[in-house]
Image 1 (cartoon, rainbow, N blue to C red):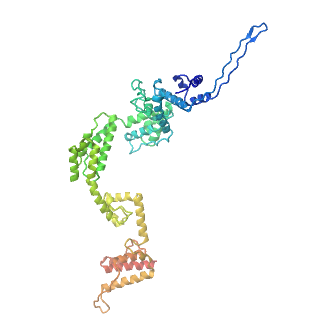
Image 2 (image 1 turned 120 degrees about the vertical axis):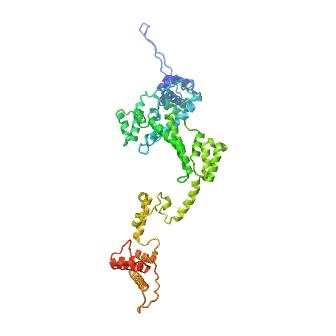
Image 3 (image 1 turned 180 degrees about the horizontal axis):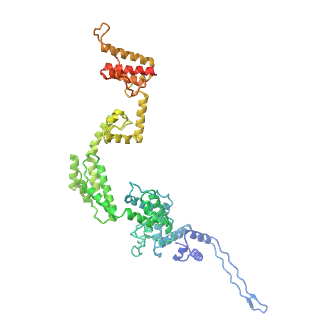
Length: 530
C-alpha cells in the first residue's frame, strides 16, 4: 500500500492493522478513518502526586500523554486502501481466502479494480425491458431472452440476478476452482463478473431481496398468459428461483428440447430448395437457424451435433436447382476446393454470387416496375395470388377468386392500402379519370348542351339519309367514346345506369351511334336535374 510508518500507526489506532480488519472497514469507513488522521491529537500533561501533611503520597501522579501529530495520507494510498477493502469483501462474498498473495495490489488488485469499475458502471444503468411470453414467444424461445435480461439486471448486491437461477445452489469448494495466478477469478469463470454469478452465496442476508426481484420480473413476463398460473403458488413468498424452475420444468423440459432436436434435424436432412420461391441466401440462413437451435438443444439433451462436414453435406444434398453456374459451384465445393467441404460459411460465401433466384428476380422486378402505372399501387408483382392490389369496381371484384378477395381485403387494411383506396375514391368523386382531359371539368352547362346537340346530330346522320330519303354520307362526328366519358365525368356522373326501358334498349343495341345516343340521354337528364 506504500503507507508510511506514521500512517500505519495511526490506522492501527483506528482499528485497521491487519488484512482481517478490513471486515469492519468498507470504503465509507476507510474514508472516515483517513479524515480522522488529518486531525492532530493534543498532548495531555501529567499530574504530580498529592502529598499528605507528613510527606506521604496521598494521590499517585498521573503520567503525561504525548500528543499525536496529524498524518496526511496521499491520494494514491487512499485509493489503494479503498480497492483493498472492495477486494476483501469480494473474496468474502465469493467464499475465497483473503491471503497476502490475493491482496497484493500490484499483481492482483490493480486488474481487479478495472473490472470492478465497469461492473459498478453497468449496475447504475437503466434496467432492460422484460421479455414477455406470448403465442409467438414460447417458453423454449423465451428462456434465453429472460436469462439475458437477468444477466443485465443488477440486484442490491451489485451482482447480476443470474446468480439466483444458476443450476447449482451450493458453491463449489475453492480447491475445485482455484484462483488463477495474478487474477481475482478462476479459469472456470473467466472474469470477475462471472465469478460473482458462480459463487455468490444463496445464504446471504440480501439474497431474499434479489430473489423477490426475480419473481417480480417473472410475474411481469407471464402476466395475462396461460403461464401465469405456473408461478402463482409462489406469489406469497415471492420465491423467484422456485417460480423459474417451475416454468422451466413444466413448459421447457427435456421433452420440448428433444422435439426441437428432431424437427431441426429433419429440416437439415430433408428440406429441399429448388430456387423458385425464395433465394439461396434465405435457404442458408434457415440452415444456420436450425443449427443454432440444435446447439441450444444440446445443452439440455444428449445427442451428437452435426460437424462442419455434415452441415455442408446437408446443404449440398438439398439443392435441387439445375442452374449451370450453381451446379459448377456445388461441384467445386464437393471437390473440397480451398477446404470448403469442411467449412459451412466458406461454402455459402462461394455459392451466393451464382444464386439463380437472384439473377432471375432482377428481370422480374424490372418488368413489374414497367407495368405499374400508379406509384401508390403495388400491382400484381407483389401479389401472392395474382390480384391487382388497387381499388376494384363491383364487376371487377366479383370476377376475383376467394383467395384473391382475401388477399385484397388484407391489403386494404394496411396503411398503404387504406391510402390507395382513399385516393381512388377521391379521384372517382372528383370526376375525371386518368384519361379525361383536365379542362373538361370546367365546362359550363351551355357548352355541355352544345356537345349533346352535336352528338344527337351525329347519331341521326349515321342512322339514315336526308329529307328526301336518299342515302347521303353522314356528317363527321368529332367526338369519340373517350370524349363521351369525359362529358359524363364533367357532369358528375359516376356509375349511373339507364332507368327507362327505351334507354336500356337503345344502349344495348350496339354500335357507336347508339353509344352516342345513350350518352346524350344521360347528359340531358343530368342537366335537367341540375
